[in-house]
Image 1 (cartoon, rainbow, N blue to C red):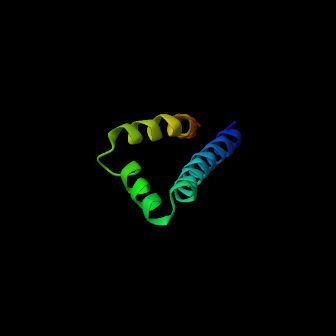
Image 2: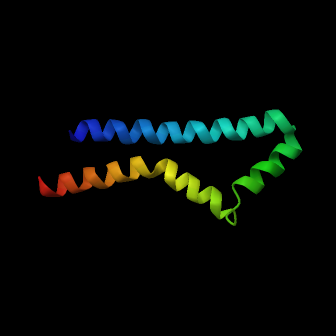
Length: 76
């Protein structure tokens, strides 16, 4: 079970990373370089709280699995 959780965490984290890279690439492809850069800076700004909440929701299954894996290892 621990190995399955490790695989799940790695795959989910990789998918989150790929979704973000695809979003950034799409912003550049749609708007051009300078407008795309401005859009990326607006989207991933530390002041854009809604984006951080969505990122946390997207990453939450992997975070819960990591917490569960750590808890399983402590009890073993």
